[in-house]
Image (cartoon, rainbow, N blue to C red; front, side, top):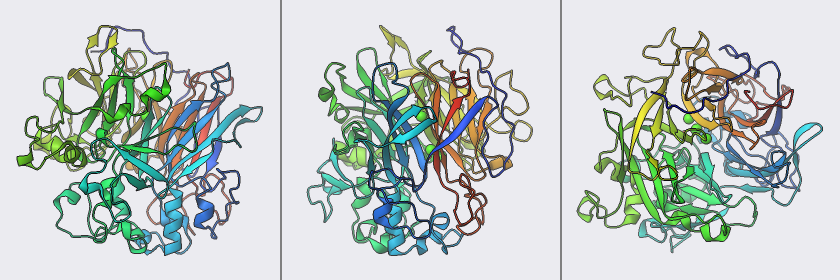
Amino acid sequence: SPPAVAEEAATGFAAIPPGSDDRDHVPAGYRSQVLLRWGDPVLADSPAFAIGAQDAAAQARQFGYNCDFTCYFPLSTAGDSSRHGLLVVNHEYTVPGLMFPGLGADRDAGQRATREQAAIEMAAIGLSVVEVRHGAEGWSVVPGRYARRLTVTTPMHLSGPAAGHARMRTAADPAGRQVAGTFANCAGGQTPWGTVLTGEENFHFFFGGGAAADPAGARYGMSPRSWYSWHRHDARFDRAQEPNEANRFGWIVEFDPYDPASVPVKRTALGRFKHEGATTVVCPDGRLAIYQGDDERFEYVYKFVTARAWNPADRAANRDLLDEGVLHVARFHEDGRLEWLRLVQGEGPLTAANGFPDQATVVIEARRAADLVKATPMDRPEDVEVSPVTGRAYVTMTNNNQRRPEQVTAANPRATNDHGHVIEMIPPDGPGGTDHAATEARWDVLMVSGNPAVDAGTRYGPTAEAGDWLSCPDNLVFDPAGRLWVATDSGMRGGAADGLYVTATTGPERGRARRFYRAPIGAEVTGPCFTPDGRTLFLSVQHPGMTAGSHFAAPSTRWPDFADGMPPRPSVIVITKDDGGPIGG
Ligand code: FEO
Ligand code: CA
Ligand code: CA
Ligand code: CA
């Protein structure tokens, strides 16, 4: 049952009905503006976007494709901290059929991309950092010294237990300590000392070649077939030529957005899997707990706890904090107990005899380590967020259409779970606050998604009305008032476009899902992020127009430009309230 705490502020807007068209929708009294589109300038010397005549050098200076996670970092601590800051944005993957003329709309379109097109794709993913300011015309990107693009070639360090390990060494990096780039960046997080964490998720999409029979690769979805053409044009993505390169992806990457020259670091202590994101929370003793979902069917929820407390007085002292600590994985007991199991070499089954001679192997093959300690296989764990009001944590299970009836558990309560659910994790109270470092907690179900009119087993709050439903919860964010916002990635299941929803975690509105934003056809909604005052909402609209048969010449929408010849463009939008008040209030 919900805790006896202050209820979140009620919502004050007329919910958007379910549906789908070629545009996006916000409630009456709200304004949406497009802040950054694929191809917009990021660096000061960025060439203008030339659709149909793109090139890789230009793309490396422009806003990338498929924006996902967004994270706002204030640039001042004065009164305008919510009106001037840095925005960090992930670019997760490419959709070649919608990016380039002539590739077509079928599943193999990406594999037909030319060398130059593949080079553009490599420059179109990674991250962007831009400076943003709120002025008379609303929000805009402003030139400044912080602007940065990170791509598949940006130099990065490896740190933690796997750095330097034999399985991390390649021809280009015989020491196993330097990696070129990051990709498949889905969601992420931020640290209390103002660095970004970005999650490398479906890295296997970008590799091809190699042997079909490869258990360590297969556990991560590797196969000789790739979704893309990269392995034909660049040897490091061909696993036959560079079998260890894939071990250098699937990590959490940390970098300092305030220092455009900072070298990003892949923090291997946090484990290698398909990271949705990394959500940090400070424990009462000052240590950090970092919650992480591994987004694949029957994968796990993880939590890393640092060995040391963070130092609020000395930013530099936290530089390597994420290299030491204990990685845990969750077991959701049927009786509501949540147990965090340690993934430490030499403990329990994680022995040399079982193929874990060192901690490097434990983190490189974190999934197999989690199998051995008998973690609970979940329905595609995605984002995690912690309520600023109650201290409870929430994790989305986006869907799992392969769960069979005999595999149903209390925490994964539906077979053929097409629409997903949201789980609440309830750490114990410790002296000084909620103890996210504890190895025992409780769990509950906040919501079981789907349309109650047609889908079995849905659970929403008692106050939910006919249109108050969602499918495939993915990214989460809390606003300062403690309302939980849920973005969806359903691929238009049930015929409805994806959106952003708001719910409460306590009180009568607990579990009710009110639709605040509806995306254009084919788009997934990602990366919701508020300014500290809760009066601006940044949102990524990812892969608009990505529907069956849609391609460059004949897309299912041309949002947001609606110009002939211009395909749809993934974009970050900004939503504000006409009266300047808190979003959702
Ligand atoms: Fe990239 Fe788990 O969504
Ligand atoms: Ca996601
Ligand atoms: Ca989030
Ligand atoms: Ca997703």
